[in-house]
Image (cartoon, rainbow, N blue to C red):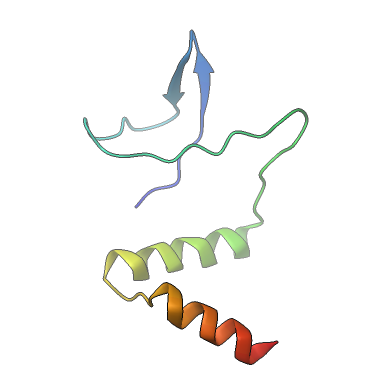
Length: 73
């Protein structure tokens, strides 16, 4: 999984850097108004590590997540 940035140009999302593989599925987070989405280097590293875990199948179910959240509350 990759994190890439881009801009909407003529109604299409154009990403910066290396092109993505043809046909890959993407998720677009679009800020509203003056919102920004900025991560410090530590948070970005944590996000990338979590994405790598998911890529390797190291996941939990939604029920497991909710159970853990209830126990920690």
